Amino acid sequence: MAITVVGSVAFDSIETPAGRRERCLGGAATYFSLAASYFTDVRVIAVVGEDFGTKEEGVFTARNIDMRGIERASGKSFFWEGSYLENLNEAKTHATELNVFGVFEPKIPDAYRDSEFLFLANIDPVLQRRVREAMPQVKLVAGDTMNYWIKDHKPALLEVLKGLDVLLINDTETRMLAQNSNLVQAARSVLGMGPRMLVVKHGEYGATAFHRASKDGVGTKPFRAPALPLEHVVDPTGAGDSFAGGFFGYLASQPELTPATFRRAMFYGSVMGSFTVERFGTERLQELSRREIDERFHLFRELTHLD
Ligand code: AMP
Image 1 (cartoon, protein in one colour):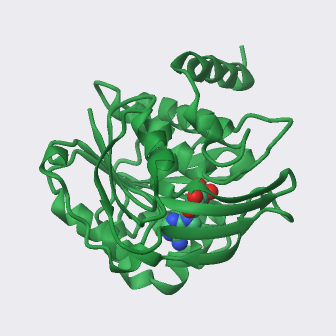
Image 2 (tube, rainbow, N blue to C red):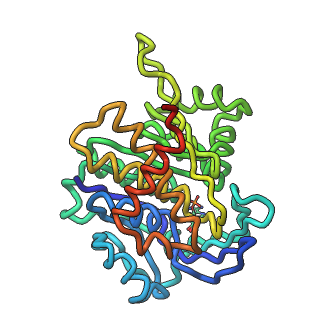
């Protein structure tokens, strides 16, 4: 089943203890699409500028990602600059330039209309909402956001949350959104804003899924997936989006969405995040094989299995 994703397609300048890269291909929708493309068909809605060339385009086409919804506009692509010098788990943002995203009117190609899964990757919540409203037929909607939008665009973001089944954000964002420093209380408060499931990403410590309490209290226990302890973390950029791509891509590839499918999806999310951080930018995600992915999935099983 196909996933349509809207989100940033960007150029990133990144500094980590392992070095620095200028203007490499990035963006939330880019990482998400690459990760999800190992599981299912992916269709992107975004806008890029004149600086987006055949080299960047080739990264998407090599993974058979549908780019018909990526508009080309005059001007520069979204640009983000960040560093991880003090804390590998959290980026320090130095610059965010929306550029062509500042005036973007998303158009959904007819060929995308039968998508059953929709992912609202990190971008202006106004755009996320427009795409959500234009695709009412989808079976499952998940989304992401970040401190930038929580801080200054909260009313628009709260509207987006009402239309989500699953929200994936990190622990700092969860606490910030709920204005509560206790993670469990914050998670409960975020679940009251709309989504039935909240996946809180903890960087190198894994991710926890929280569920909205049902009337009978069944199925509400949190579930934790670990992250793989890695000897070398080169660049954490895109780990969260890759987690989301692995998580949602796996769900879209399954015939049935049971609680066990969601738990396995959390592990596939961790698997894809663990690959991304091994190299700068999207380098590692571009050259994986399904065999490597499944081998790492088994490594995760061994990491957590008791018997
Ligand atoms: P993460 O998975 O959280 O590390 O996401 C990293 C990606 O998010 C980078 O490739 C950036 O281009 C993108 N990004 C950074 N800030 C924003 C923003 N305000 N809106 C949308 N995308 C962003």
